[in-house]
Image (cartoon, rainbow, N blue to C red; front, side, top):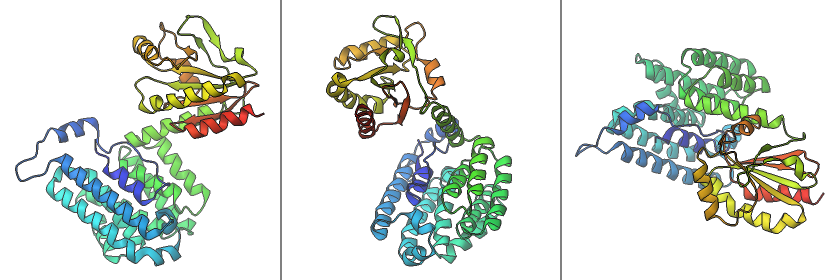
Amino acid sequence: MLKSKTMFKTILVAGAITAGLAMASPDAMAAKAAKPASANKPSIQQVEQNAETAGYKSMAKIAKVLKGASMTDVLESKTLRKKFGGKLIPILGSVVKTFDKSVAQRPELVPFFTGARNHYLAIMAVLGDKSALARLTALAQSPQPFQNLLGRMYVQEYQWLTHQKDAAAQQKIMNQLAAIAKKHPMNEDIFQLLMTMRHIGPANHQLSHQAKEIMLKVLRSPSAQQYQQEMAMKTAQSSHLNHHAVFKGVLLASGKPFSTASLKGHVILVDSWATWCPPCRASIPHVEKLYSQLHKKGFDVIGLSVNRHPKKLETFLAQHKKMTWPQMYDVNNPGNMAAAQAYGITAIPTQFIIDRQGVLRYIVVGLNPQQVTADVKKLLAK
């Protein structure tokens, strides 16, 4: 699966851009993968690997130059751009050359690498590279529609980052991108560009909000749809935080109804997981340790499996004898879909931590055992 564009953008604005999905549709990827390499032509996988390697090397070099600062810091500070620009431009330029070589070797990769390359060119231009800006400007005037569109978009990225305190100028840029988004709702580059603009250099909160609204309400690309699902999840979950929460279901072992309300007076970890989920499996030893250490102090764990196949869940539990806490799972209605929808579970593991009074105090999404441990101990100490 092609990862390059998202990876490179994440490198450049570490901590500011959320990595999205692959840039290609499944059909496009299948067609691309079906073309074998000729004797004198590297395979698509080889080209992607070379680009990815170049990206990681540039990331290491950038980190060495910045010595603790981030690219976000540099892009938001004229002083830092002046200080580091001369050293960063050659590093970024070397990756641009890799992109150019990649599409020369495999022209079918043009749609997948052009946006990432133009993003690098825009950053180089912000850092003071006039030749990079000239190249972007030329692309924005190209008679070829695809090149023209991406050229215009990344010229706007350059303009956004060089007008960080000019709300009027940024509003014009936002309006232009909103029009492009309506015309090209499936374009991944617009989503990535708006994500950048939302987090780096908006002149005011209103502009950041406008970027978010376009991503939520206009765009329909795979990354945009993933982002929309994540935001819906956060909204659903935030509505439950600091309110009484009751998880109801059927116990796998007995088939009897169960409710977390029966454990009032205990600190409860409701662990949403699945046997096929690697991060979920990785969290199990941490939950086992926490349960064995703290159960006698009033700590309980309740499993909430989203497995679709009861037999696989039963087999897994039979092989993991230390998972002695109850599992809510109805074999006649597998997946715990009602609870998943009610509590906005679209990613696993998601762990809900309820205090002794039955109030949901913390939600931890993803593998973060240190955070779970800290939150549980904090509630037990009260």
